[in-house]
Image (tube, rainbow, N blue to C red):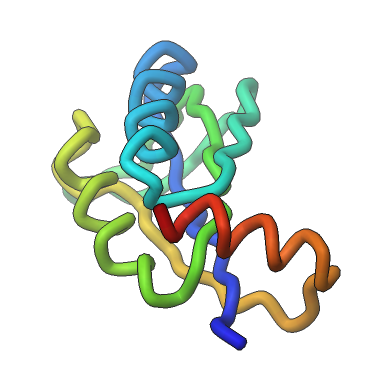
Length: 106
């Protein structure tokens, strides 16, 4: 059974996140993306602390697609260095897993 993974990333706006998320799903790189607006980030960038309003995207996919997803995020993103973190899924409902594999295997 192929492992499922979540890819966590952030975007500067809901518009950019939705456009990218739709393309990622259309390309069958993910079965689903969840977009959560309203996040505030504080982070180091180029020697100083920055504050930004961002949008979280959680991409649900198969482990074999993690690198193509990473490449798509970098291609579609306006940030120079977007956050792209691949998180292993420890447990998954079998029916959901079957759906995820089916939708990313076309």
